Length: 160
Image 1 (cartoon, rainbow, N blue to C red):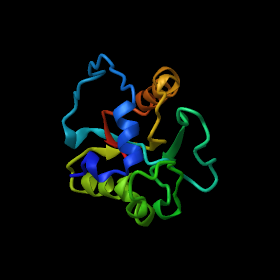
Image 2 (cartoon, one colour):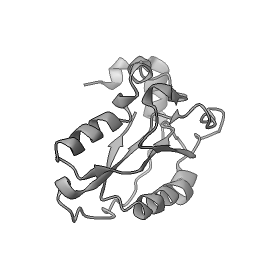
Image 3 (cartoon, rainbow, N blue to C red):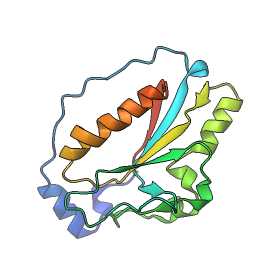
Image 4 (tube, rainbow, N blue to C red):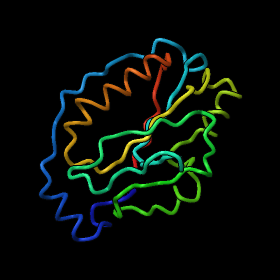
């Protein structure tokens, strides 16, 4: 397990001064289908994108709140990571996108009937969003609506 003491001094100081926000968390839905019948989507904050999609913009003050849609058929080896943070080692995700977007694992779980099926599309965000207002008010509800349209029963969150 990582500890704050593992971080560079600059990051420890930033995190000590950061004004963390609190949200009144209430689960938005309850799993109504057994997992062997459920459609599962992945939402990652690894800033993964296809080569034909724009990279996440590291220059956006407060963090790029946009997202990228990734189909179930995406070639994982072709994905690029545009995460701005250097507070973690990117080499694992760079070597195998399954670490942040485990589509191969979802397919395996479906083949074993542990889940119903992977969703047709999945979503990638940029982590390290220090000003999450537009994410909370705009893009998260857009993605939630798309997940609803895709009849997703559960979401696997892979924070980076």
